[in-house]
Length: 337
Ligand SMILES: Nc1ncnc2c1ncn2[C@@H]1O[C@H](COP(=O)(O)OP(=O)(O)OP(=O)(O)O)[C@@H](O)[C@H]1O
Image (cartoon, rainbow, N blue to C red):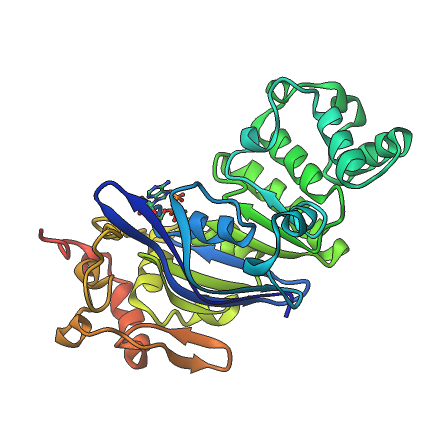
C-alpha cells in the first residue's frame, strides 16, 4: 500500500475550545489509484489531506493515529526528511491554483525553480522539461512566459498540475482541483489529469465536495461527515449501492458530470454540526430522513461488500433507504431545529 492512514485525529485549539476536525479516520491509497475524499464544506477533508504532508496551521495538532507513506512513518520523520518528500514524492495541488502559483512570477520560472532547486536539474534541461510538462497538460510553451493572471481559470489549474507533476511524484494530493471552474472546463481538466495519472502510474488523493467528480475520475471513495469517515470503498460499489444515508443524500444532491440525463436533485437540508462539540451517536442523525432511536448510539463500522464499509446503523437496510430516497419529498422538512 502506498499510503495508509490509521485512526488519524487532528484537532484545532481555538479560544472557545478544541475542534475535533478529523476524528479517527482510516483509509488506504493503493499504488496507481485515485482515491476521492468527498463531503460537504467543514467535514474535515482539507484538514485531513494537509496533515498527510504535515502542512498545518500552528493551532492544529496531531491527536493520534498513524500515516504511513511507502513504509515510512510520516509523523516520525524529521522536518528535513519531510521536506525531501514534498514535491519529489508527494505533490500538493491546492484548492485554488492561485495558491499554487505565485502571482508576481512568470509561470515558467516557477516550474523551472522547482526543477532546479528541488530536482537538482540544470537550468537548460529544466527549461526543456517545463516545455514538456506544459505540452503534457495541453498548454502552449509560449505561455510559460506568462504571469498567472494572464491565464484563464482552467489554464491556471493545468499549470498547477504541471507544477505538481514536475518531479514525477508518486502521490499527488489535489484539493478541490476543479471546483472554481465551469462544468465543461472541469471535464477537460479532469480528463487531462486522469490521462496523466494513468501514464505516470500516479496515486492520487482527490478532495471534492462534488460526488459527480468522484464518479468521473476516482477508483475508491472515502465519504467524510463531521470529522469521521461514514462510508468507503470502490467507487463502483459505493455509488451503485451507497450504504450510508449521508452518501445516499449526497448522490441525490448533485447532477452527474458525465451524463446528459437530468435527475431531480434534492439537497440535504441544514449543514454539518460544529466540531467543537459534536453530537453523540450518528453525527448525521439530525439531517437524516431515516434516523431512528438507535441512531442516538455511537455507530460502528460494518462491512457491506468485499472492500466496502459503512458507519450507518441501518446499513443492512440500505437498499430500502435508497429506494425511498429517490423521492425528493423524503429530504424535505427533515431538519426542524
Ligand atoms: N485554522 C483553524 N482553526 C480552527 N478551526 C479550524 C481551522 N481550520 C479549519 N477548522 C475547522 O475544522 C473543521 C474542518 O475544516 P476543513 O477545512 O478541514 O473542512 P473541509 O471539509 O475541507 O471544508 P472546506 O471544503 O470548506 O475546506 C471545520 O469545523 C473548521 O471550522
